[in-house]
Length: 92
Image (tube, rainbow, N blue to C red; front, side, top):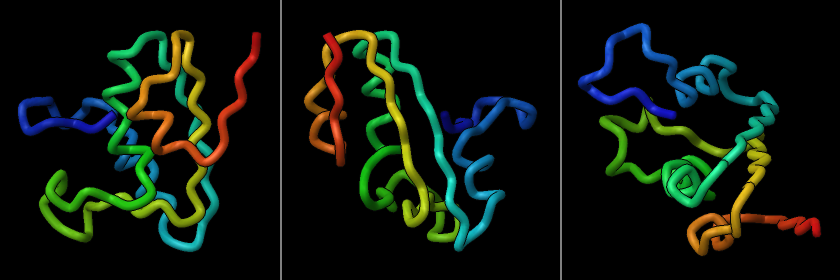
């Protein structure tokens, strides 16, 4: 999802990929969470507003205007993801 200080520079970084599109764009990101651990890893990414403590500057924060996250959960939806969802479709 997001590269840490210990990762090499060529490590994929979804947050940076989204930021490359720039402001005033519409972006859809599909995520597949195979388990509850995966859901916990994306909880800050899918929040309505960025957590500034997670970023070094406002320039690196991921603002959510024009951004839609589609999250497929193979397991039960965790409370962390459920509380951040705008729409939940349960199949089965």
